[in-house]
Length: 111
Length: 114
Image (cartoon, rainbow over all chains, first blue to last red; front, side, top):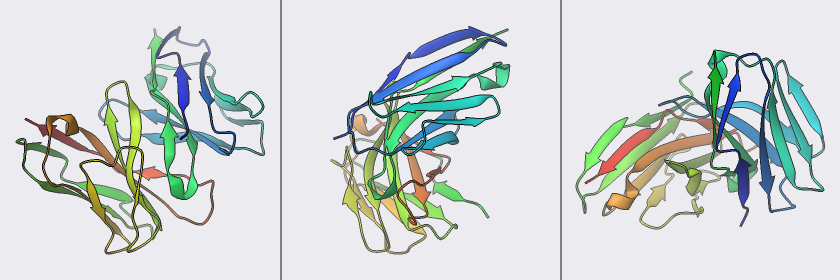
């Protein structure tokens, strides 16, 4: 089955700096790559996703890049703010088969 | 429009007891999923359903059963709970109209098995 590796497990950045989280996957047939944000005690919420026919997607301070040849994709958060502190999960798959998630990155924004 | 709801929010079981977790969605979604979330493990797919009356196994199905008798509901059953099933359980749904679809998650059920 699909295997998704996510790095780093913990990321601490100064407020206003950028944060980058990277994921690699094993199944070359994967073509849907969402990112979820989960605050403590809450449900995962989709923040951005990318389909395999697109290499990059941006939504305000958040961007995702995809390299299908190398089988990796990344989340970029610019101008980080305290409310960005959370656990972020990458995932692959979609449709009927469900999603395969990475193990998560705990993002800490230092004031 | 409540989206995806789950009951109960929290439950404590003794080893060997049984229980059913209920997931309901009001978005007329075809696909529904059950995941479990353990510390440091991300979310793992237990079972899923692509429509009323259908179910399929995910990555970690052992010890669980599911039923989808109505389109809007997806039930997860534990016949004989074990401490290894202590976890947070999330239900999710998606429309089923295409392969690249957003999954919407419920608020979760925290289960503690003693």
